Image (cartoon, rainbow, N blue to C red; front, side, top):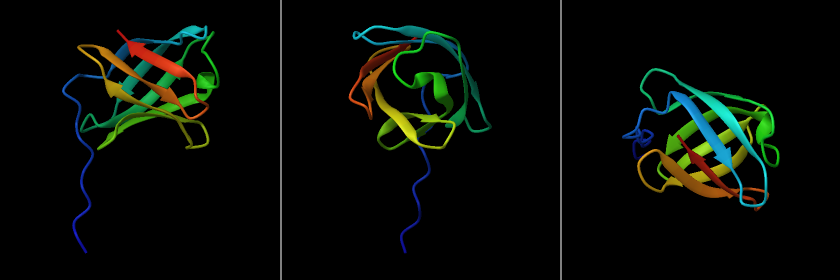
Length: 101
C-alpha cells in the first residue's frame, strides 16, 4: 500500500490566542496550544462562541486545511488559510466562520 501522507505543518505558529467569529452572530476567544511537530494541538474556548464551538477541544492540519474538533472527536469545521493570521471556512452545521489573530 502507498505510504500515508503526513499532515501538512502550517507555515504559521498556531499557539496563542485566536478569535472565532461568525457573520451570523457570536464570537469568542480561543487559546490554541501545539503538540510536537506543530500540525495539531488543543483548544480552550472562552464564552460566547457561535454555534457548537464552545465544545472545541482539538485542532489539526491535513491536506484539506485546518480542522476544529470537538470533545467527542467530531469535526466542527474545516477552514482554509485566507491571509496572514486568518482562516475562513464553514462549520459542518453550515455556519460560516473566521478564525483570526
